[in-house]
Image 1 (cartoon, rainbow, N blue to C red):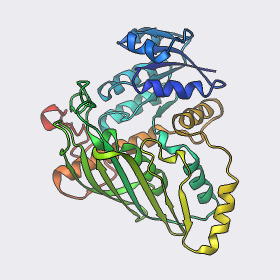
Image 2 (cartoon, rainbow, N blue to C red; image 1 turned 180 degrees about the vertical axis):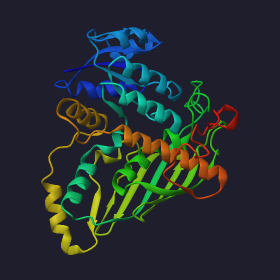
Image 3 (cartoon, helix red, strand yellow; image 1 turned 90 degrees about the horizontal axis):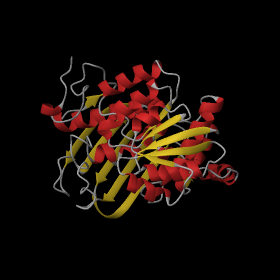
Length: 359
């Protein structure tokens, strides 16, 4: 049994629901939040979980095995490193950190610590991704060719009224960092490493500091291409994904926050392959979706060894892509990956007066 302290009662409430769905693997013992009234409301009378505002006590409590960091991005590195140094497993919400320099600091902390580290990318889990994994294993997809991604969500003034969203200092980025990041991780999961990026970003919807619209082109190391269209000014919230492989095309529905939670439409390019595809799809077991799938895969990795869990390397690749997108948009050029310490935005993509200098 993995005993958990959730740090932050915002998105932490959704994490709590997933842990509760896995009672054979996890037991949440603490919910830590500066607003203990909000935290108590999340628990809805559950007296088995301690509500506290004392993060230091949670970090040093030997009865806690895992620290789940659900805080604003500017706190992710500090709390994750402290938890690792305290000997805990660590889960960290996206974005894992705010720069490649911070990612490399985190890598050093992970290497020196006994615990596991997992950045949160829950879009990877559900019947749709189980289906893609099975079809890839059966050799029925062929090579990736083209992908299109839409992150078309609606965020108004009320969403930004909490004081940290939409700011460089605390949220650390806009729609590229906090909204489309999951779709971008998902396309990299299936299309592989990104080789280059072109991008244009804009702030068109709300009077905020960070971007709320984006048009992005990615070229992958295997030659495949992907386009990503992002806005926070849509009428409603939809996410749409289409993966075109050599032998089939997989198209999502429009569920905004869990695109893999329902089966996708998967069509063979050669109609003769469709019966084999359908046979595999019909035999798939029931999938664990979203956060439940994420936490189940992590528990299996902690107990039995590596498998389908999200890794630090996945998180670093995500931060590298975010860095390249901001660089491409500001410079107006195609940015080649991978990025190292000499990259212009290695120390962060915050506006230059707020960004540490490259050393």
